[in-house]
Amino acid sequence: MFGTTNGAVLRAALLGGITLAACAQTGLAHSQGRADGNASAATIEQSAANQHHVLESAEQLRPRAEQGDPDAEYQLGLRYGMGSGGVSQDYAKAAQWFGKAAAQGVAPAQYMLGLAYAAGSRGVPYDNAKAIEWLRKAADQGYVDAQYMLGRTYSGNNMGLPQDHVEAIKWLRKAAEQGNADAQFLLGMAYSDGKGVAKDYVKSAEWFQKAAEQGHAGAQYGLGAAFSKGSGVAKDESEAAKWFGKSAKQGYARAQFIFGLMYAQGQPLPQSYTEALKWLRLAAEQGDPDAQAYLGAMYHDGKGVAKDLAVAAKWIILGKAGGAQDGATMLKSVEAEMTPSQIAVAQKAAQQWWAAHHESAE
Image (cartoon, rainbow, N blue to C red; front, side, top):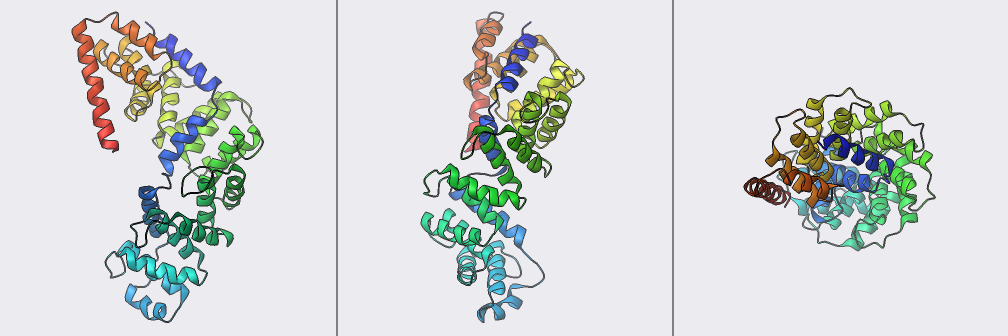
C-alpha cells in the first residue's frame, strides 16, 4: 500500500512549495491561448462575436460606411468578419473596413486590425510591427482588450516584442484596473513571482481574488493555493478547497488534481474515494502528471475502484514520463508485483493513450 503515503508527499510538496509558475503556464493555456497566428485568429473570432451588434444589416450600414461614418465602417467590418448581417464571411473586406475605421481613431477597430496583422491570413499579411502599432493606438485610447494584449505580449508572448516585464506590468495594470479578469490574473502572478514588480503576496492574492470572483479558473486556482499556503492571506484550508473546487469545476486540470487529493485524504473535504477518483481521472485525462501517478496509486490500492495493477501501472508510467513527483519510486513498487506480460500490457496502454492524446492536440 503506497497510495496514501505518496499522496501525502505529493500534496505537501505541491502546496508547500508552490510558486504558481505551473499555474501561469496552464492557466494561460486553458483560458487565453497564445498570441501566435492560430490563437490570434481565434481571438479575432471571439472579439468580433463579443462586439457584434445585430440591429443593422450590412446593407443598412453600407451607405453610411461609404460616406465615411467611422462607427458604420467598424460595424460593417464586424459583419464581414463574422459572416453575418446578410453577407458572407470575407476577411479581406473585414480588414478593409476595420482599416478605414481605425484610421479615424475607432479604438475597437484598431484592436481588431492589430489582431488581424498578428494572425495573418485574416485579410492582411502577417506583420508584427503593424500589429503592435495598431494595438498600441487602441491601448493609448484606453481600450482594455488592447491594453491586456500588449501586457501579455510584453510578458513574453511573441509578436516580435522583446520581453519587458516592467512594460508588461504597465499595460496589465491599466487593463486590470478596468476590470479585465485575464489582466488581473497575470498581475497576481507577477506579484507572486516578482516579475516587473517587487514580490508582494498580499497584492498577488488581492488580484487573484478580483479575477477569481469574475470566474477566472486560473485565478481561482491561484487563490486556492494562496489560502492553502497562507500566502498573502490567512491560511484557511476550507477556503482553499472552495476556490480549488470552483476552478476544478471549470475544467482546470491542476485544481482538479488538488481537489481530488483533498477528497482522497479527507482533509479538509470529507473523505470520498469515489469523488477523489472522479477528479483525479479528469485531471489525468488532461495530462496532469501528478494526477496520473496518483490515479495509478488509487488503482493499485483499490480505493474507489477495483484493484487493477495493469491500469495502475499505465497511469504511473504516464505520470513518470511527465515528471510526476515520486513517479519512478511508485512505478518500481507496482512493477514488483506484476508479471512481465502484465507490465507489457501496461506499457502498451500507456503508449496508446499518449499517442491518441498527442495526435488530438495537434
